[in-house]
Length: 150
Image (cartoon, rainbow, N blue to C red; front, side, top):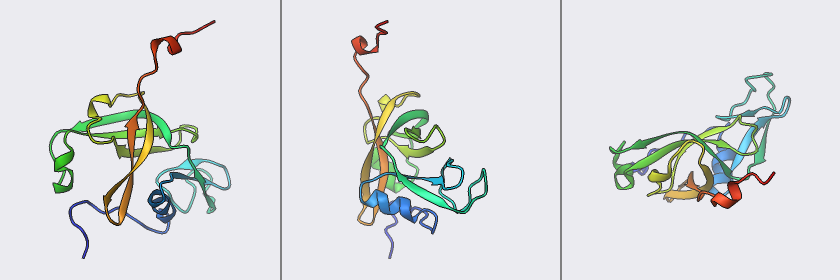
């Protein structure tokens, strides 16, 4: 019997490596072994060169928010205690801007959701058999460190 409190993820031959890595607390991305293009969601064939040789690489787990929405009404019973909830699109560092992951910010961080905000991945256990990559916002750098010293 499955736990109906949190929606399940699609785990198939193309995404199993991603979900297994999340369970270990690691973030991996898939790229083409032929042309090197990053791709999300994972798939067997490259949409650019059509090669069928995907390669998985560990990512640093940081990035920037490139889009977000703050949800104030529960999307289902599993999310009722998390409101307001910031759903974010994160452009992952090290992927040449080609890999954008849709996720959420850690509970209570919805006020910090802003395009351009720096984030770091965290792995959140939502049920005994499911760990999801979520993100936390970096604090803003001090004004002193943002100045151009030329």
